[in-house]
Image (cartoon, rainbow, N blue to C red):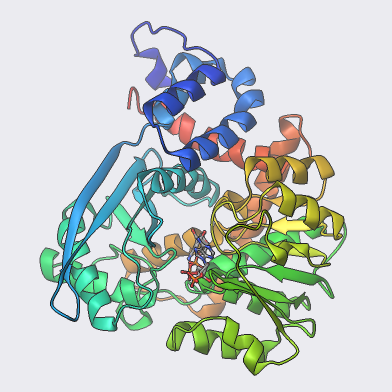
Length: 464
Ligand code: NDP
């Protein structure tokens, strides 16, 4: 480790609890960030015991501190000519193993703490993909719901008018996330190109005729199902015939359903922020095509599903309920694909009681810490987000490679690479969990494997 040899004498820091305490004190009112750090630190104990050099180099204190935080005003005009003001963010968390990489989220709940949790997770996830990408995340408290295309365009142009000076194909490469799909990436890319006078791979999730990659829209959902299939294989089982709960109905959930159908499974639920549908007959390809048209073209609400397919039941979301009814349906597998903390301890208890044997996380941090512990204690197959949903960013990495080479790969080529990457991520998590004394615990496996690569790069690069 050449970097560490050149460092001056440094005080050996306190234990993990001390660092966690300081994270909470220095970043008040950011509960999601605290939760993400705590989950990773809990897993790292066996790795830190084996590698005292990380402690003496104060790796933990450094890795929780973003390299750079950018926060800015986004003024724009609505269709009535009124001035609107939103807040924009980009968290450049860690560039030890590659340019910052991670999505942009447009949702009214976005704040600094949520983006820091997402950027922190992204560092370890990107490390697991086998590709050279650092971690970042950004977005705005802008709500695209109910806005016209022109309003979304004016917002995106104003957002990029500040962001463009901080990003670049070799510096920081944003992508989509909640509320940022193909339409938004188009408006953002168009404005970047005008300002920078450069046509480069500065964003991923682009349209196919202007630098995008086949399979990128499908990648997170497909990857999550590939990962689930590997988890089941480790217990000599398969997805064939399995009843599956899926939450959300956006990009990740739609392609999770599509790939589940390819594997012979039977998806029976979907949701949006207004509520959930349960279709006991299963969501087949025809119904999925209808949902895609509803969500991606008409930008409609899921409750319409139950009007159209009359055997389905719609349950409206209830803010005061202590559990989500979607997770209280008899099934074999669960694929949370909406948002953070959508599975609490009660939901986890319901899932386990109803016979769910596998949870594969498409959304980021959809399970609370208590729910995660319950899945691990119950010894069901539990695929944490940073491993199970890494297919999206991995395929963004493949889009970056194609942009750099000015080549496009076929659908089969990209899908095959994605599949191989998900198999490799599963194997890495599985073997690392075993090597560090917690066989079957893919949370530990993902966190330790993701951490080691970044930590070693940071050591090699000196005091960065
Ligand atoms: P979309 O915007 O396409 O869809 C999000 C879905 O989740 C919608 O159905 C939305 O409902 C629902 N949802 C969002 N927020 C809430 C909320 N607070 N309560 C209830 N429902 C909510 O986003 P994606 O599918 O891209 O992202 C979903 C999850 O997957 C996120 O956690 C994201 O970080 C994660 N992810 C996405 C990746 C990608 O490649 N897109 C990559 C890796 C992870 P409504 O329409 O009513 O808001």
